[in-house]
Image 1: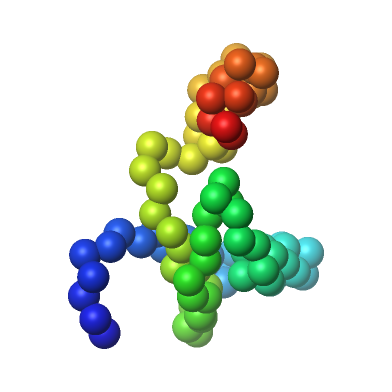
Image 2: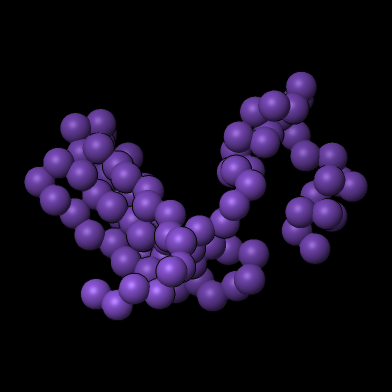
Length: 89
């Protein structure tokens, strides 16, 4: 493997928690959709693979935390229009 000093994010799903078929389908759908997407505001997926116990998604690293975490800090868990304009410009 070539070292390129690039940071990657790795999303890990524990297969023991994917017992519901809807949840399994959701993870497969997420992988397929991310592989098809090519947009500056959508995180890129570089690789997806699985072991006996886990599913791994190797993705573009974006610093600053997740939108989900940010919304959890908001009182109504909604993004105000002005904040959305700054984030999604």
